[in-house]
View 1: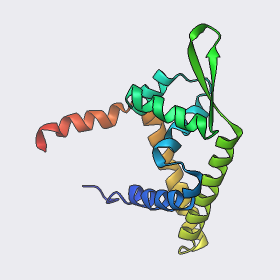
View 2: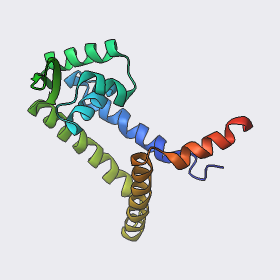
View 3: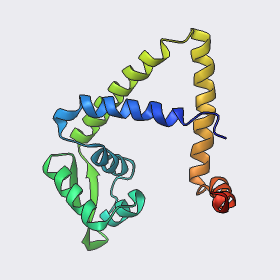
View 4: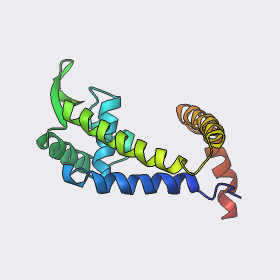
Length: 157
């Protein structure tokens, strides 16, 4: 049984709704944020690598990249090792967008924590950090423990 009742996910979803609402004037949706995030974290990534990373169809990625390029958030450069390939890079506008999004999320989470005492905030932050580190390690390893548990319960559903 999930003791958290998926509340971490639900809080993140509320934060996401606020972010989308506040950033509406940028014309960037949550899917485009994901693509910009992938490019920011992997400068020089190819469109096919974006497809794999985000589990998206080639055509959808091509359309999104073209849109983000037209909006000034991404640039393409020829791959020096393969003249046919193109490498994607985030622009300064994409970095500004990230800073704006981070600011909105920061204000939301600061507001949320105001309902706790200073001691509760410190304890929560410590535990949350431990959970985040554990989840990140599991992802880096390819989610072996979680996948094994899912496979064990596959017949139970």
